[in-house]
Image (tube, rainbow, N blue to C red; front, side, top):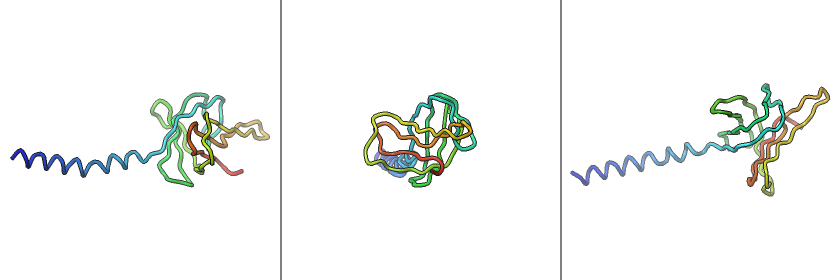
Length: 119
């Protein structure tokens, strides 16, 4: 009887383990935004954000999360850099109307980068 109990537990663990692996497929990084910046229809205020997406790319749907709340969403292109950057790099474009738009995010010690909008 004890043997059957362990077999059932092992079988349950074997079946549930792949679900945990699938749950970790979400890509996410933290980034600090230093100045107010427009991303998609939302205005991000200065602060720390968790940037996350679930797709493998190149087109991804990005969520900006702060204090466990989604504060902005935008579409981006996930690109792979040839080399890793040593620190986060947030690229901002200033428009002729003096509006700052989020253009790219390069993540420290990663080859991944997110490109927002068209150039």
